[in-house]
Image (tube, rainbow, N blue to C red; front, side, top):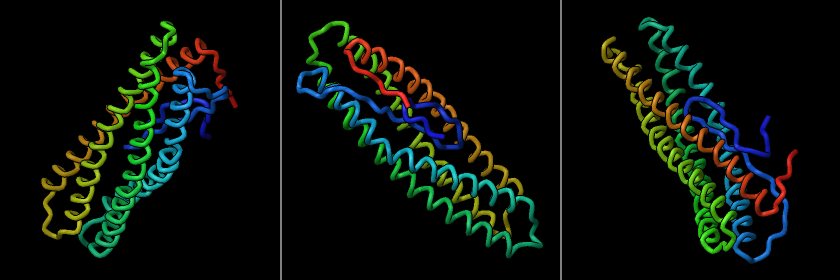
Length: 223
């Protein structure tokens, strides 16, 4: 069940969820209100990100099933190995498409957040300004973690493709297969690492944002 209040860390292979905020409050043109408006727009921009996460999670589960099925076969089932490998390759291509859409959503969110940083620079109240900078610091680290995850996920998908192409090769040796599997696993280990960093910064951003809006007099609507 998606929580519409906060980003909540969800661990999955190469997939990382972001929960949006529903905020209430007036939106005037002073720096604090402009900041609030930009943060809302940044959160709104991540709605496609959430949808792509759902799709990627389903595709990842399907790919795992295909991989397990292939690895249970031997060369006596060569035609079946080829058929399953081709299906897995199609799955990887779909994941590449949805990963791009996910990244586009995050890039748009990051662009909106740049406007929030500009507004924060013009805030006169010291306490609010400090809290705005604290929130911005965690959000920037969050975007950086996502960027690292995105790049590594792209690498992982390329490694997946090579793996399934190798599985269709009758002359594939066990050593070559094991080496490629090790590369795939190492790539996903990095993804998990960046995912953990992303989740930590998401949690810290949520707390910093709540502190900011409490100081500014905005109410975070909870549902």
